[in-house]
Length: 277
Image (cartoon, rainbow, N blue to C red; front, side, top):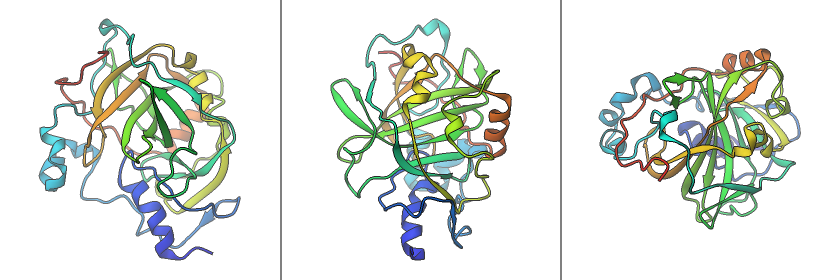
């Protein structure tokens, strides 16, 4: 049985920041579990996505949200072309990767199990001769990025760290309703865990490669130098945004949106982002 401090230490980092999906603790049992700490685990109310233009005023540690030169998200355009460099390779995305499915307070989320400070056991990708490790994924609704002025219903973020535990890259896939079920989202329980329920956990194994397959194996993409899309807006991350959209069924999209609340940061002006460079 887990103590409340241990549970808090496992989940507070995940719900307090967009890309902080490190979970260093062993699994609970292989079924959904609920603990009496939901009030302590709620997203803090002192910053909100619909007030993102004021994040820099709230806390001096959030100053990059106002002064940064590579803030995310940005508007992407079809006439920018697509990247011919920094191609990611997902050979280390293995099926039956185990972790915890939960709601990060804004939408569905997943964290892979790994020992504290150990990242090389996680699903991995290669980028510019560097191996990066995916700690987990989460969904923003609506999408953070617009493409050609259009904003998708939601956006899936695969968050990657280097071997030292530094955030290095985000693989982003836009989500919209189509005709058939997405095999990626079919892996997860329905209905999904609601945004008001930050205390439920589903322990399970998933195939992270399935989402990549559903966007033509990420063969076409935009890339740029950017930041976290929530405070403290840390810069130095490489973003990859798939050209193709991952389509879900209408039922799956309704499930995703029903489990989510508004989490799209205002678009940032392109500055030193080096789009597709």
